[in-house]
Length: 240
Image 1: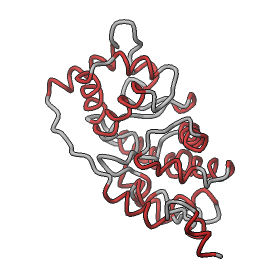
Image 2: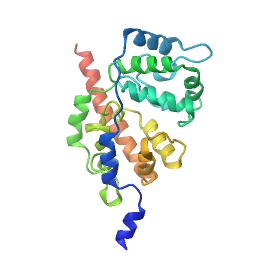
Image 3: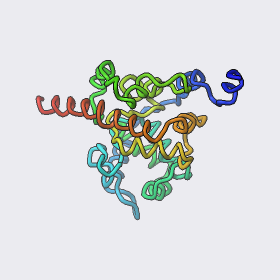
Image 4: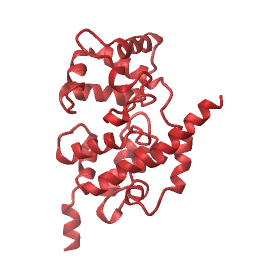
C-alpha cells in the first residue's frame, strides 16, 4: 500500500535533485555594447514604458517593502529567460508583462547582461558561512537547509546553492530577496498562476508546502540569512 502511494506521489525528491544538476543553459559573453544598451534601458526605459530602475532601484537593489526583487548580480541567462516568460504570459505581473512584450530580443539580452554585471546585493561568501549556523528551531530555516524527505521535499539549497546564493546560470539567489517577493512567487507556483519553471519542479514543490511553511521559508531567506549577509556587505563597503 505504501509502495502504491509512493508511485502516485508524482516527481520523487531524488528526481528533483537530479534534475537540478542538469538544468543548465549555455552562457554568453556580454559585449560592452550590450551592457551599455542595457544600462540605458534600465535608467531611461523605452518609449511608452517605465525604466527598470523605477521599481528595481538605481543599482538593481530592488524595493523590498513593495515586493520588487533585486536584479543586481543575478545570472544574465536567468534574467533574460524571465523577460521572455513575462512577454509570453508564463509569468504574470501587471507592470512587467507590457514592458517585456515591448522589448526586442536584443533589448532583453542587453538588460539582462547589464544587471548581471552589477555587484550583488548580498555578500555571497558570508551567506554561505551563515548556513552552518541556521536557526534549527525555525521551521522555515530547517526546510530551506534540510528539506523534509518524508514528504519528498529536498532542501531549497540543493538547487539554489549553499546559503541560497544561487547557482548560475539557471538558479537565482534567494538569500537577500525580500520575504514578500519569495512568498508571492511560491504562492504563484502553488496556485498555478506562475508556470515557467522547468519540468514543473517549483510548482510540484510549492504545492507540498503549507501557507505557514511558505511564510517560514520566505522569512528565512529574506529576513534571517538575507539581512545578515546584506549587513556584512554594507559594513565592508563602509570600511573601504
